[in-house]
Image (cartoon, rainbow, N blue to C red; front, side, top):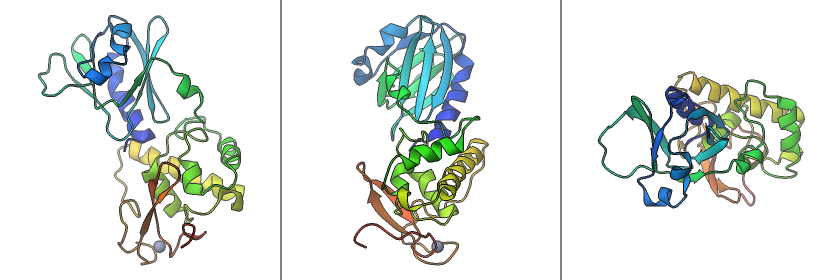
Length: 250
Ligand SMILES: [Zn+2]
């Protein structure tokens, strides 16, 4: 699943098109239905930036397109005129290269959803105490769920949530209201460091994510998994060394 670090990489790849007037097509019927392509066809792409899990493409005239990749979307940059099978969502054709969005699945002309996002965990100027205060405002919610609430802090998905909480030896099931500020700050800091390392090209070893049923590298207990939150994203944790207990009723 694309998390904040992979959105940053996509934004970096697309920088080669910034400053160019682009021809835009939406070959996929669902993308055509959004009405985005005719609004940006022939405009100059002025900026591409990742905000949380969104990619914001700014065009002249103040038009902003929001691309959210969910589980399946991918942006690629290919030579202009590349032959391809299948129907991409969007093709931004520049002078020599084209940016191609595959598998949408969210493409909108307004950036209002972005205004509701919390601070980006990868932001250079991130103020961790402010994020801690936002997490605190979530009330008695499991930590793993709060860290993935994009309105509180943007960019963290279930992989980095799981790995960050293993790193600080804290269970994703412990409630935010039962934790001191220091632990909340450590959780945010650990996610940020792991994501920065991934962004810098490191391939960190996964300790719990998709490791259910395998022994924990730190204590040997078997890693567990369980759906968490309204969106039922899978949480992975080690019941042996991550403090704070398991899911309700376990
Ligand atoms: Zn363990």
